[in-house]
Image (cartoon, rainbow, N blue to C red; front, side, top):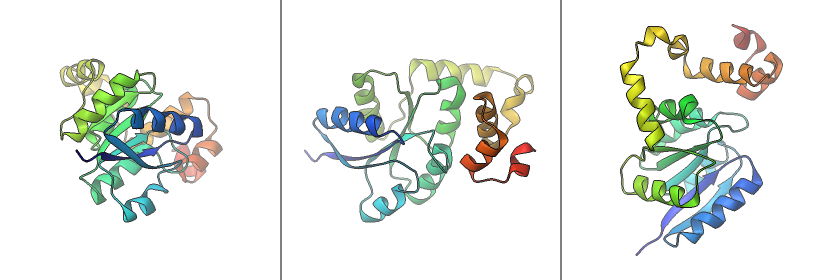
Length: 184
């Protein structure tokens, strides 16, 4: 049986090293490479498009959400599993709507990662029990009750950075925007 190919994208070296070891331990997955930013993915993909991309949401430069949208437009055959330290209620639905085949919190056990990867590489969506609950709640809610639902993805990213206590200058630099744009 041919091994499924995987690329890892996370800005933390130790996370990439750990993921590599875990994924290669599954036996039928081969990690082609790992990178620290979304920009570094595209030269890799020009050489070989992987079957699976494990994509961190919080990356330097362009966010994982932006990178995901570009990957989906250029390489829709890649099964993307979003990984994050953020709880599912903050980003999971946005990532799935943008084309991720699944969302996994970084606290998840290795066997959960394996299950998620096997699910998405088979062409299915990986939906955790928590994400299922959130999606049902999302459908049942009146969007007018939740003002943040009206925010664009970029506005939502700015809101999260503000919640983390980052300055407008830091947010502008992180998102490659002007301070004036961030402040509006």
